[in-house]
Amino acid sequence: MNETEYRPLGTADGTCSGINAGQGVSVATETERGGAPYEMCRLADKDLGMRYVLVARFGPYAQEEFADNQEYDGEDVPSPDTPAHDRRPGDRTGWTTAKCSDGQALFTLEAADGRDGDEPGETVSSSELAYGRAALSVFAERSAKAHGCSAPVRS
Image (tube, rainbow, N blue to C red; front, side):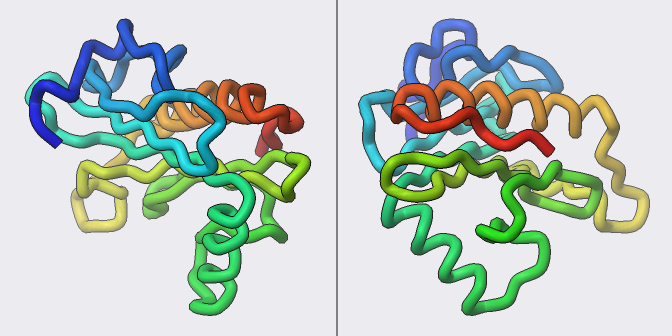
């Protein structure tokens, strides 16, 4: 991605629309919201340092993600048996799901700044975790609604 693809978060009108700036996040690059089975929103700081990546997967994209996670037996990864998971210190990902006509949709948030609270002396503040939770909630609710799915599961 190049610098021209980023725009102030407040002007986002695609998959990042409705997400507030905060916790150093001020710009975004996004896909259009038009019923695609895979949507993405990347949130960055003013220097274009990536902070969070939000992804919505529908139909076969969601099913493939669930199957891959079950096959490789990862811990703290999206699973159809765990419909929602809030990111916590030490976790890189939070997720939620929604019921759609073509199965279960998956919405994920991944910390992209290299900080997950897992290293000695490294902390992830409660306000950072709350920001991520709010960003995922807005992203998932708008995406699910645009696809005619139920409201995303709250954890």
